[in-house]
Amino acid sequence: MCNPRRVRVEATREVVEAWELALERSARASDSVVSELEVRHPFGGTLGQATRQIFERTLGTADGWHAENGGHVLPLPDGRVRYDPGTGELVVTARLEDQVTVEGHAAETLRGTVREEATGSGVGRYYADGFAGRTREVAEREARAVAEADAVDRARQLTDRLREQAGREQSSAAAAAEERLRRAADDDARARLAEERERVRADLDGRNRERIARLGEDGLRAVNGVLATAYQRALLEFARQHGATGIRQEESDGGIDIEFEIDFGGTEN
Image (cartoon, rainbow, N blue to C red; front, top):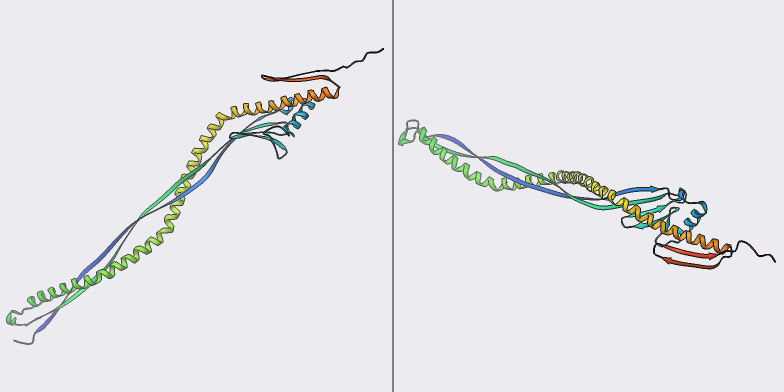
């Protein structure tokens, strides 16, 4: 028998902590959509000069009309009528407006892995001559068992630290992705808004095309009402200027009857 010899064995265990995080962000975008169509009528040019002057003066006091940028405007449901004294044009405008709101989305899944090796060691003793059965093989087997047990114990000790590290990496990755996801959600919202604006505008334009004829009729009816008043005033003014007598006016369905007498001659004695 001689002095015992030693054999040293190391064992490793890999500790892995994986994380996964699903992120989703949304963004809202809104805008107003306006559809406006115009129809022009050369109304003033169809009137005589004197009648046009009286008509334009009458517009200044007509019910529902107001002055705007040198013209006369009558608001209509979802539209308006504007008379321009400079050109004599009657402009009928059909206007519809709608508010569009959309929501954009962006999603991303983040994954990561934190890994580290735990190393354990064990020592076994044996005799060169195998005294008491202490052979090298026995010593290595015992040392390996101790090393593996030590590696497992060290791996357990690593687990909490790696879990904390994985949590820090997850938080850092989420913070880095936040701005990226926000921009992606904003881009998606803008793209959806552009599509929705086009759809809504096409719908409003279609409705306006159907309405513009009716609004034009309403506008012409309103203007003709003012014109009738202008004719009435013109006739009464003419009658008074020429010393008419027996002036009488009577409203009936669809018009106003005006009667008066003027003596254009004289009786010589």
